[in-house]
Length: 313
Image (cartoon, rainbow, N blue to C red; front, side, top):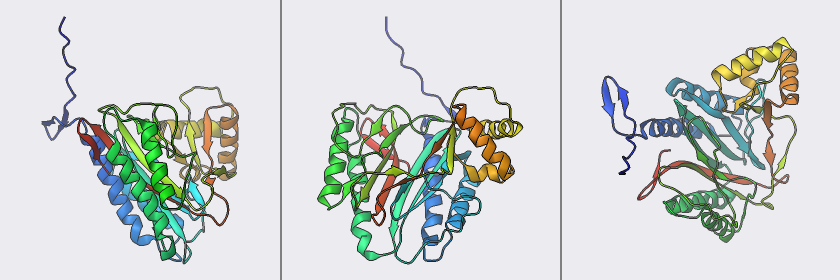
Protein backbone atom coordinates (compact mmCIF):
# COMPACT_ATOMS: atom_id res chain seq x y z
CA UNK A 1 0.00 0.00 0.00
CA UNK A 2 1.40 3.40 -0.97
CA UNK A 3 1.22 6.02 1.76
CA UNK A 4 -0.30 9.31 0.67
CA UNK A 5 1.55 12.32 2.12
CA UNK A 6 -0.59 14.42 4.40
CA UNK A 7 -1.52 17.64 2.65
CA UNK A 8 -0.39 20.74 4.54
CA UNK A 9 -3.26 23.04 5.45
CA UNK A 10 -3.85 26.13 3.39
CA UNK A 11 -4.73 29.39 5.04
CA UNK A 12 -7.28 31.77 3.59
CA UNK A 13 -6.95 35.53 3.71
CA UNK A 14 -9.04 37.97 1.69
CA UNK A 15 -10.48 35.04 -0.22
CA UNK A 16 -7.05 33.79 -1.34
CA UNK A 17 -5.37 30.60 -0.19
CA UNK A 18 -1.81 30.56 1.13
CA UNK A 19 0.46 27.52 0.79
CA UNK A 20 2.73 28.67 3.62
CA UNK A 21 1.98 26.52 6.70
CA UNK A 22 4.18 28.79 8.82
CA UNK A 23 2.45 32.06 7.93
CA UNK A 24 0.93 32.70 11.37
CA UNK A 25 4.15 31.70 13.16
CA UNK A 26 6.05 34.22 11.05
CA UNK A 27 3.46 36.93 11.68
CA UNK A 28 3.73 36.32 15.43
CA UNK A 29 7.50 36.68 15.08
CA UNK A 30 7.17 40.05 13.39
CA UNK A 31 4.90 41.32 16.18
CA UNK A 32 7.36 40.22 18.89
CA UNK A 33 10.26 41.86 17.05
CA UNK A 34 8.36 45.13 16.65
CA UNK A 35 7.34 45.06 20.33
CA UNK A 36 11.00 44.75 21.33
CA UNK A 37 11.83 47.68 19.07
CA UNK A 38 9.30 49.74 21.04
CA UNK A 39 10.91 48.71 24.32
CA UNK A 40 14.54 49.35 23.38
CA UNK A 41 14.52 53.20 23.39
CA UNK A 42 12.51 53.18 26.63
CA UNK A 43 15.37 51.48 28.50
CA UNK A 44 17.04 54.45 30.16
CA UNK A 45 17.63 55.79 33.67
CA UNK A 46 14.48 56.78 35.60
CA UNK A 47 12.17 54.94 33.18
CA UNK A 48 9.33 53.11 34.97
CA UNK A 49 9.27 49.39 34.33
CA UNK A 50 5.46 49.44 34.33
CA UNK A 51 5.47 51.95 31.45
CA UNK A 52 7.68 49.63 29.36
CA UNK A 53 5.55 46.60 30.16
CA UNK A 54 2.29 48.32 29.27
CA UNK A 55 3.68 49.78 26.03
CA UNK A 56 4.94 46.37 24.88
CA UNK A 57 1.80 44.48 25.90
CA UNK A 58 -0.45 47.11 24.37
CA UNK A 59 1.32 46.85 21.03
CA UNK A 60 1.06 43.06 20.98
CA UNK A 61 -2.64 43.12 21.89
CA UNK A 62 -3.30 45.54 19.03
CA UNK A 63 -1.38 43.50 16.44
CA UNK A 64 -1.78 39.84 17.43
CA UNK A 65 -4.43 37.49 18.77
CA UNK A 66 -2.89 37.82 22.20
CA UNK A 67 0.15 37.63 24.45
CA UNK A 68 1.77 34.23 24.91
CA UNK A 69 3.02 35.47 28.30
CA UNK A 70 3.29 38.82 30.14
CA UNK A 71 6.14 41.12 29.19
CA UNK A 72 9.10 40.25 31.43
CA UNK A 73 11.59 42.91 32.52
CA UNK A 74 14.59 41.41 34.31
CA UNK A 75 17.03 43.83 35.95
CA UNK A 76 20.56 42.92 37.07
CA UNK A 77 20.47 39.64 39.05
CA UNK A 78 16.88 38.78 38.04
CA UNK A 79 16.92 36.01 35.44
CA UNK A 80 13.26 35.45 34.59
CA UNK A 81 9.56 35.80 35.44
CA UNK A 82 9.47 39.40 36.66
CA UNK A 83 6.57 41.44 35.40
CA UNK A 84 5.07 44.52 36.99
CA UNK A 85 2.37 44.50 39.61
CA UNK A 86 -0.48 46.96 39.10
CA UNK A 87 1.17 49.52 41.40
CA UNK A 88 4.81 48.82 40.42
CA UNK A 89 7.02 51.86 41.06
CA UNK A 90 10.29 50.17 40.01
CA UNK A 91 12.52 52.37 37.86
CA UNK A 92 15.63 51.65 35.84
CA UNK A 93 18.83 52.99 37.35
CA UNK A 94 21.87 54.48 35.66
CA UNK A 95 24.09 51.38 35.42
CA UNK A 96 21.47 48.63 35.27
CA UNK A 97 21.49 45.56 33.07
CA UNK A 98 17.98 45.24 31.62
CA UNK A 99 16.40 42.29 29.78
CA UNK A 100 13.08 42.48 27.94
CA UNK A 101 11.37 39.16 27.12
CA UNK A 102 8.15 39.19 25.07
CA UNK A 103 5.79 36.74 23.43
CA UNK A 104 2.92 37.06 20.97
CA UNK A 105 0.59 34.55 19.36
CA UNK A 106 -1.53 34.52 16.22
CA UNK A 107 -4.34 31.97 16.74
CA UNK A 108 -2.05 29.98 19.03
CA UNK A 109 1.05 30.20 16.80
CA UNK A 110 3.69 31.58 19.16
CA UNK A 111 6.74 33.82 19.11
CA UNK A 112 9.13 34.27 22.03
CA UNK A 113 12.05 36.70 21.92
CA UNK A 114 14.35 38.61 24.26
CA UNK A 115 17.39 40.87 24.41
CA UNK A 116 19.49 42.50 27.12
CA UNK A 117 20.72 46.10 27.23
CA UNK A 118 23.74 47.14 29.31
CA UNK A 119 23.52 50.74 30.47
CA UNK A 120 27.02 50.28 31.88
CA UNK A 121 29.49 49.63 29.02
CA UNK A 122 31.51 47.38 31.35
CA UNK A 123 28.75 44.76 31.01
CA UNK A 124 28.68 44.61 27.21
CA UNK A 125 30.80 41.44 27.23
CA UNK A 126 28.13 39.67 29.27
CA UNK A 127 25.43 40.77 26.83
CA UNK A 128 27.52 39.60 23.89
CA UNK A 129 28.10 36.19 25.52
CA UNK A 130 24.42 35.28 25.60
CA UNK A 131 23.86 36.74 22.14
CA UNK A 132 26.72 34.73 20.64
CA UNK A 133 25.56 31.57 22.41
CA UNK A 134 22.05 31.91 21.01
CA UNK A 135 23.33 32.57 17.49
CA UNK A 136 25.64 29.54 17.75
CA UNK A 137 22.74 27.33 18.86
CA UNK A 138 20.50 28.55 16.02
CA UNK A 139 23.16 27.65 13.44
CA UNK A 140 23.17 24.09 14.82
CA UNK A 141 19.38 23.64 14.80
CA UNK A 142 18.79 21.27 11.90
CA UNK A 143 17.15 17.85 11.49
CA UNK A 144 19.16 15.14 13.24
CA UNK A 145 21.09 17.49 15.54
CA UNK A 146 21.38 16.37 19.16
CA UNK A 147 19.98 18.82 21.69
CA UNK A 148 22.58 17.88 24.32
CA UNK A 149 25.35 18.64 21.83
CA UNK A 150 23.81 22.06 21.21
CA UNK A 151 23.66 22.57 24.99
CA UNK A 152 27.37 21.76 25.21
CA UNK A 153 28.12 24.38 22.53
CA UNK A 154 26.07 26.96 24.40
CA UNK A 155 27.98 26.18 27.59
CA UNK A 156 31.35 26.37 25.85
CA UNK A 157 30.49 29.69 24.18
CA UNK A 158 29.46 31.33 27.45
CA UNK A 159 32.30 29.87 29.52
CA UNK A 160 34.89 30.83 26.90
CA UNK A 161 33.66 34.41 27.30
CA UNK A 162 34.40 34.19 31.02
CA UNK A 163 30.85 33.67 32.35
CA UNK A 164 28.56 30.85 33.52
CA UNK A 165 25.46 29.53 31.74
CA UNK A 166 22.33 29.40 33.88
CA UNK A 167 21.72 25.68 34.33
CA UNK A 168 18.04 25.68 35.30
CA UNK A 169 16.81 27.72 32.32
CA UNK A 170 16.47 26.24 28.84
CA UNK A 171 15.20 26.89 25.37
CA UNK A 172 12.00 25.02 24.61
CA UNK A 173 9.90 23.53 21.86
CA UNK A 174 6.74 25.42 20.88
CA UNK A 175 3.45 24.02 19.65
CA UNK A 176 0.10 25.67 18.96
CA UNK A 177 -1.19 27.14 22.24
CA UNK A 178 1.71 25.41 24.03
CA UNK A 179 4.52 27.71 25.16
CA UNK A 180 6.64 24.95 26.74
CA UNK A 181 6.29 21.66 24.89
CA UNK A 182 8.13 18.34 25.30
CA UNK A 183 11.66 19.06 24.09
CA UNK A 184 14.15 21.41 25.73
CA UNK A 185 17.35 23.06 24.50
CA UNK A 186 19.66 23.08 27.54
CA UNK A 187 22.25 25.77 28.26
CA UNK A 188 24.71 23.11 29.42
CA UNK A 189 25.95 19.71 28.24
CA UNK A 190 23.78 16.71 29.07
CA UNK A 191 23.43 12.97 28.52
CA UNK A 192 20.00 12.77 26.85
CA UNK A 193 20.51 12.50 23.08
CA UNK A 194 17.16 13.91 21.95
CA UNK A 195 17.14 14.77 18.25
CA UNK A 196 15.87 17.85 16.44
CA UNK A 197 13.26 17.03 13.78
CA UNK A 198 12.13 18.89 10.68
CA UNK A 199 8.98 20.93 11.20
CA UNK A 200 9.58 21.53 14.90
CA UNK A 201 9.52 25.04 16.34
CA UNK A 202 11.75 26.21 19.17
CA UNK A 203 12.43 29.24 21.33
CA UNK A 204 16.23 29.30 21.53
CA UNK A 205 17.23 31.23 24.64
CA UNK A 206 20.49 31.36 26.53
CA UNK A 207 21.42 32.98 29.82
CA UNK A 208 24.92 34.11 30.81
CA UNK A 209 25.77 34.98 34.42
CA UNK A 210 28.59 36.66 36.31
CA UNK A 211 27.67 34.42 39.24
CA UNK A 212 27.46 30.66 39.76
CA UNK A 213 24.90 29.98 37.05
CA UNK A 214 22.32 28.86 39.61
CA UNK A 215 19.03 30.65 40.15
CA UNK A 216 16.64 30.46 43.09
CA UNK A 217 12.96 31.29 43.56
CA UNK A 218 11.73 34.50 45.12
CA UNK A 219 8.35 34.60 46.91
CA UNK A 220 5.21 36.36 45.68
CA UNK A 221 4.97 35.46 41.98
CA UNK A 222 3.33 37.95 39.62
CA UNK A 223 2.78 35.44 36.79
CA UNK A 224 0.32 32.53 36.94
CA UNK A 225 -0.93 29.79 34.65
CA UNK A 226 -3.99 27.55 34.63
CA UNK A 227 -3.57 23.81 34.36
CA UNK A 228 -5.88 21.87 31.98
CA UNK A 229 -7.93 20.33 34.76
CA UNK A 230 -11.35 21.05 36.25
CA UNK A 231 -11.91 21.36 39.98
CA UNK A 232 -14.92 22.47 42.03
CA UNK A 233 -14.57 25.89 43.66
CA UNK A 234 -16.77 27.53 46.28
CA UNK A 235 -15.67 31.15 46.39
CA UNK A 236 -17.42 33.44 43.90
CA UNK A 237 -14.17 35.31 43.29
CA UNK A 238 -12.51 32.06 42.21
CA UNK A 239 -15.30 31.41 39.74
CA UNK A 240 -14.88 34.90 38.29
CA UNK A 241 -11.08 34.45 38.13
CA UNK A 242 -11.46 31.11 36.33
CA UNK A 243 -14.02 32.51 33.89
CA UNK A 244 -11.75 35.38 32.84
CA UNK A 245 -8.55 33.32 32.71
CA UNK A 246 -9.97 30.35 30.78
CA UNK A 247 -11.75 32.55 28.27
CA UNK A 248 -9.03 35.12 27.64
CA UNK A 249 -5.69 33.48 28.47
CA UNK A 250 -6.46 29.77 27.92
CA UNK A 251 -3.35 27.88 29.12
CA UNK A 252 -0.91 30.73 28.46
CA UNK A 253 0.79 32.38 31.46
CA UNK A 254 -0.82 35.65 32.56
CA UNK A 255 -0.06 38.51 34.94
CA UNK A 256 -1.79 39.00 38.27
CA UNK A 257 -1.85 42.65 37.20
CA UNK A 258 -4.29 41.83 34.38
CA UNK A 259 -6.81 40.35 36.86
CA UNK A 260 -6.19 43.13 39.37
CA UNK A 261 -7.69 45.60 36.91
CA UNK A 262 -10.96 43.63 36.98
CA UNK A 263 -11.22 42.28 40.52
CA UNK A 264 -10.85 43.78 43.98
CA UNK A 265 -7.57 43.11 45.77
CA UNK A 266 -9.04 40.96 48.54
CA UNK A 267 -11.14 38.83 46.16
CA UNK A 268 -8.17 38.38 43.84
CA UNK A 269 -5.86 37.19 46.61
CA UNK A 270 -8.49 34.81 47.98
CA UNK A 271 -9.10 33.39 44.50
CA UNK A 272 -5.39 32.83 43.92
CA UNK A 273 -5.09 31.09 47.27
CA UNK A 274 -8.07 28.75 46.67
CA UNK A 275 -7.14 27.89 43.08
CA UNK A 276 -3.52 27.25 44.01
CA UNK A 277 -4.52 25.00 46.89
CA UNK A 278 -6.89 23.09 44.58
CA UNK A 279 -4.07 22.47 42.09
CA UNK A 280 -5.59 24.26 39.11
CA UNK A 281 -3.34 27.33 39.27
CA UNK A 282 0.46 27.49 39.41
CA UNK A 283 2.66 30.50 40.05
CA UNK A 284 5.86 31.19 38.12
CA UNK A 285 8.20 32.50 40.78
CA UNK A 286 10.69 35.23 39.97
CA UNK A 287 14.10 33.62 39.42
CA UNK A 288 17.23 35.34 40.66
CA UNK A 289 20.98 34.82 40.80
CA UNK A 290 22.96 35.83 43.86
CA UNK A 291 22.60 39.47 44.83
CA UNK A 292 25.06 41.79 43.02
CA UNK A 293 25.56 39.19 40.26
CA UNK A 294 24.20 39.78 36.76
CA UNK A 295 22.29 37.74 34.17
CA UNK A 296 21.90 38.47 30.45
CA UNK A 297 19.52 36.72 28.04
CA UNK A 298 19.16 36.50 24.28
CA UNK A 299 16.33 34.65 22.54
CA UNK A 300 14.79 33.99 19.14
CA UNK A 301 12.06 31.72 17.79
CA UNK A 302 12.99 29.39 14.94
CA UNK A 303 11.32 26.86 12.64
CA UNK A 304 13.38 23.77 11.79
CA UNK A 305 13.43 23.21 8.02
CA UNK A 306 15.22 20.59 5.98
CA UNK A 307 18.03 23.11 5.42
CA UNK A 308 18.38 24.39 8.98
CA UNK A 309 16.67 27.06 11.09
CA UNK A 310 14.28 29.73 9.84
CA UNK A 311 14.25 32.59 12.38
CA UNK A 312 10.87 34.25 12.84
CA UNK A 313 11.72 36.94 15.40
